[in-house]
Amino acid sequence: MTRKKILTCLMLVVGFGLAGYLLYHTFREHSVSEIVESVEAIPTVNLLAALAFAFGSYLCLTGFDWTGVRYVKNDLAYPKIALASFIALSIGQSVGLAGLSSGALRYRYYAHWNMSTEDVAKIVLLSGVTVGIGMAVLSGIVLVLNPGDAASVLHLSEGAIVAIGIACLAATAGYLALAAFVRAPLKIRSWTFRMPELRIAIAQVVIGTLNFALVSACLREVMAASADVSYLKAATAFVLANLAILITHAPGGLGVLEATVRHVMGDAASIGSLVAFRVIYFFIPLFIGLPLSLIVEAVFRARKSMGNNPPLNQDAAAAAE
Image (tube, rainbow, N blue to C red):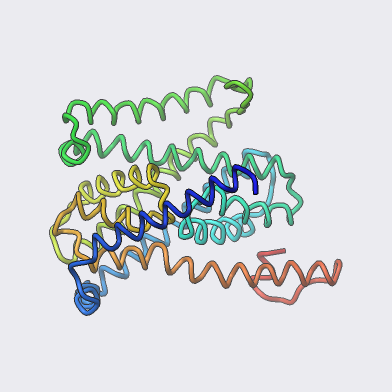
């Protein structure tokens, strides 16, 4: 076993251990019946709105891959891009180490559609950049407009929080400036990166920011059922939770997201709302993505065994091929 594999396994063990501890710490004072009652107390209209926001987020996530595919100047059809993106991210966001797990799934699909390993790596990289940009913009907005909550959690002055927010927005503006004026590859030691065209960079900013804004709206919707929660406060809690997830590497943010949101929101984040958010945004897409991945894999294998014979007239087969 290589050092990289050993390190990955250790990170998973630590991540699951931390997730288990935080879940226990968050839910230890509540019985199963109390948790069920708390979930049932959320009005149906709030749950439906949260589902709609989650759907919008996953639709934006397909745009992450779309910008990556266009970045490598490939004309792969959007239905195929959306299929690969949804399966990869619905599974990757839940199992943890999304960059590795979703990257492996993307490679399986894009390689089947005749993309080179280098192009797939670029797509995964640009998708990661879009994630960073989207989070930077949302972080900048909430830290500038609502520095008080972040200051109390991070134990910094509100002035420092505002400065961090401005720096996030400035970094995004700098990225757009590089995309507009720099065409030569950027070199950092042995690492080389060619900036995307300005139109692709702008799409990254818009799609990335909208994605995280929709996730925040999903979180706010399930919490608004039991307390008067502003969107800005919910978005602040989501931003801080993602910061904690990046530091801990907990699989799917399990435990970390719940504990951080609970810490920021207090009683406004009921146990039922935290469970509902986890189910709506992570578990439902996972339970759709897993069987869909098996169907697509079966289509791939059938196509391979049949040679060039056309697949059965099914939606999944059509999208896969």
